[in-house]
Length: 527
Image 1 (tube, rainbow, N blue to C red):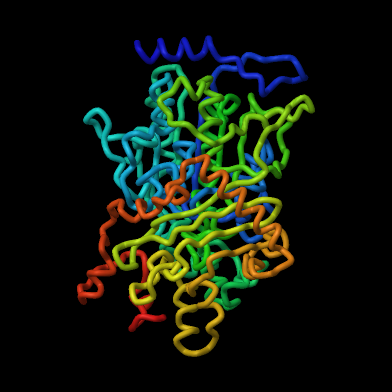
Image 2: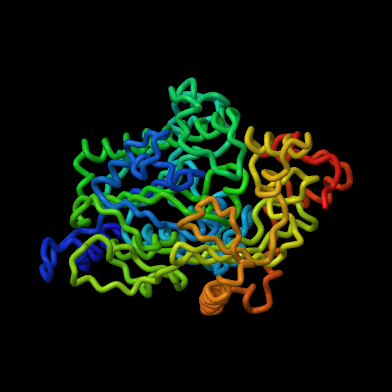
């Protein structure tokens, strides 16, 4: 009865203006269902809608074609848990205390948009990967469901042994079938793909592609067959994620629910390759994003070139649900709703920021005392400015402990092998070597971010402008690192199974890292 009352109030109160067929004419729209779909480790532009020829994503492409395709969407933090924390709360990771880190605790004080929707008339559920890795904690003595009630009991055979056997589509149908209350719902589809590990050669054997199909290998990796195969294996798992997205959309269409369902498709961070996932560059933080809502988006098929951030998603979901942020238990957010893009009328007045912020603290361990590699950065006007606060630390983790902030892979193994054999050290330098305190890249001309302009005198003015804008915004958001308390992020406990890895490794203890290969460990420490 309580759920019915909440929904009735929500429905009567909601007047959504973004889908007006003509300026000044409002249309009553009931709160939409919400289907949020997030891949695990897929970079921009690796979806067909962006023109990438070696990955086939008809599901994502349909969402883009019948909705909106965002070409400058960024995560504030390119690692699973902190990126998902930003999505769920609408706050940047440095505003989330322990949730800024990978494998930490999710603070009780911060609510998620899925929890809020569940408290205001929505039925919520999820399948696959929600907020992870870390400890969600409890609230009022009960375990928290940060992304809704889990639906993972339906399983299915998969093309390779490395792909999750969770039947994402089957569990989504199970959720809808159990939805006996005729109210709005919100569902989180968190695919485990294309997270590693992969079945080597699956892209060629099952994806029916040739290594020559890769149009361009990033210049920070060697252009070799082993690397091209690795990329195709990654592409094959993106296609698997997309196959379930396509099936979910088809089911909504078959059951008459597609018209009033807001579908958002993205990924949490960049591809699980060296110098991408867990780092802070264009390939790391730039994410695919497509949004579809037949009943609520006017003039679909548009591309949106504005900078948008993951912190904009929670404000969007609450707005379409008819909820004022101040009426919820959500902590304040610097995010801005994306609903202004749903109506392209010239009367729309935008006050959007023309930049996005990013950064990171502690991801995976492998440094003395489990400390992180703190970074803050800003994307603006096709430039990326980066401030590295501890440049004497190893950015991908210490060499003797396996560079733990880079997943084990054929590409990683090949780059390490090239240095050890004296073949070519430049790839190791770009992917694992230490960095300078400041970096500046012209992303428009150098999307690989390999030419650091920070030391060029002719860009001093631009660099100073970006650095000041970054600092001003971080101060407004009470970033502890701006307030002289950045060390607090290293004080939060690591909740992963390899806590205190560096010290245990130094003592000769055999501690399985799990996500890196045995060959990733250097025999001796490097300087």
